Length: 256
Image 1 (cartoon, rainbow, N blue to C red):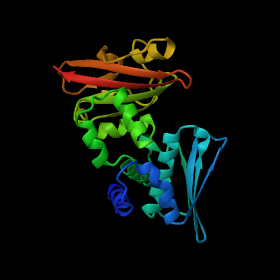
Image 2: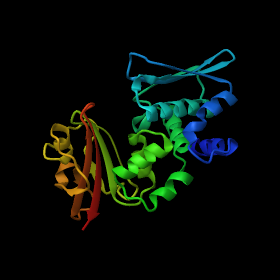
Image 3: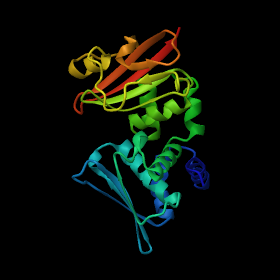
Image 4: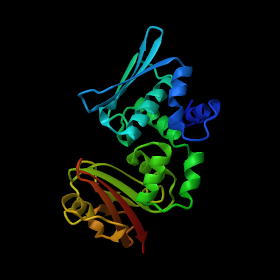
């Protein structure tokens, strides 16, 4: 059964109509899944699903110190279990979770986790009238108990406007995405690329500059190729977390 369908079925089976993250413990208990949290020294390790004899164990690294990411890891491992992925042990790293997974089973577990934690039927109506900005991202993250990065990438899946999201750490792009309306129209900076020194993201990272909305920016700062050939009016909205060196950048494009 496809990950999205399976997640929707689980939501119906447990009559989950509010915050799905709050029901994970109940689901673990129903399936007699042994759940444990530990602080692991390896920050690249996120969690595991282990099948041992007649037991199923889910472990999560809580050294992440981010409740939203912990919830996503729980849902991801639950996805491996619910989707009946073959294997005695799944050890999931940062590279396996979120939107940069490459292994087919990890991609499926991520799809399950996103649909379970942020169901389309609950999230999409909110986005019909909400602006694509940091207030909406925070509202979705808080309301569904997920991280901001999971919230914003889920938002992209339903938004029909021309928006893109680029996350960077210490000035290097870590992951990116774009709304359906932009796919096939432009190429963005690639993962691993350095952000432009003249971008607002760079200024937010190295100074006390704080943005309160979208501002016009040179197209070349973020776009490497315009496939339509028409003129693009690009606006950027970035917020930085200096303690971690992370910057989340929202891009809005108008084709003139």
